[in-house]
Image (cartoon, rainbow over the protein chains, first blue to last red):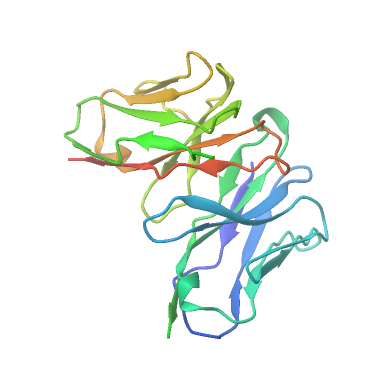
Length: 114
Length: 116
């Protein structure tokens, strides 16, 4: 079946540090890949997405590239801010009978200190 | 535009009691999802509706969970009877259609259920 694995967390960084959160996936066919973010006290929000191999999703300074050869979709940001502190979820959506269904990773807690 | 609405936001019950959650999706969204998010894990799909029909309920524990979307708009999720392991946040999401990459799912704030 489909699955998503995220790097073990939590991650603690100083402001302006470089961020990488690893995500790998297992899926049949050609899934779409997503990063969702959950800020404290808020609901899940879509951060970025990529729908085919070699696509790069980007938003708010975050980037992730769909790597089919390594089945990965790592999230990166060059300079994090305190306001980026949140829980980040990698997810995929595959075809078949559950078209549109999201399969999530376990989430990575990011804390950024001033 | 208004987002996905859910109520209640918090609920505490004892095991073997019943509980119901309500979700009102974004206007015009045909697809509605219920996810269960246990602490420390990612959300897991329980059921997916397309208008008022069920598309996927393979992960729904049907001996105790039920869900309906009678008029193809709002939806209720019920647990009867509740078990301790049902303690989780129940998330509702909606999208225009079920298209995987092209139709963003919008999530509600969730209902946090504690079963004692």
